[in-house]
Length: 299
Image 1 (cartoon, rainbow, N blue to C red):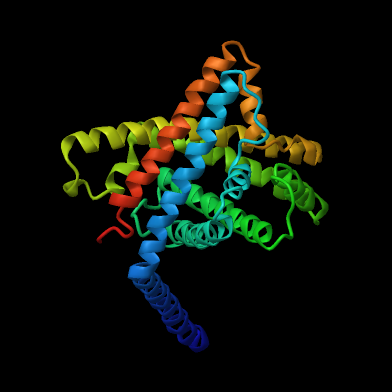
Image 2 (cartoon, rainbow, N blue to C red):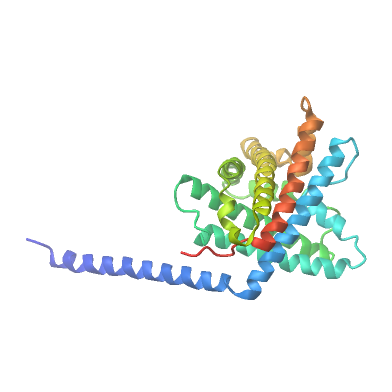
């Protein structure tokens, strides 16, 4: 005989599942509508401009290092530190903070709700992990810029990564957490090479508004930039993985140290010049994104 209680539970379970799906679809729709807000879109596009400046300055610093010129710092926090020397530093930093926060939010939206349609296959998941990584990175950068603005942070922030990893290692199961973070970082870096090969970023642009020459130039800048970012992200992920494996935060090296490692290899200065030029290309590609990126894909 059938169990009446079970027969009642099954429809309830199906109903609950359908309700969860409806809520997820509604949440997705609401987030997409919020992301389509004109002001958020403008801030997101300004975020691409700020990202372009950060990568461009990083690339220039890498090129200077490749030419044998010493640089104090070469990562994004160091770039903000350099920008703070502007006569209009306070106003500039406020604008940068707002734009970084908007771009960080855009990273989380891309990762969680997939408005750009990356999908749920292996390549799509890696791409969305990259968006999440970007969101976390720019959220941390926003906090750094904010604390720097109010005077709570001194110096160029070059040791921030080691402090963060050290705090993670001191937490329960901290070693495992840092190891996972390193693996995600490596996967994100390798995903950049996949994106470089497949040029998945092409469909994110309003290509119908671009001339043929603009499409070729922007695609070339994107591929070159993805290559350099793939090199750097993979190295950073590997450094974080080593820190987790050895339970030693000092092994978590930043972008400036990654540049130094590249420079010490055979033909290292030439290799670093290539990576630095690619970062400049990525900065220019970010400017192109500010102009032509689709903030949401039509479904």
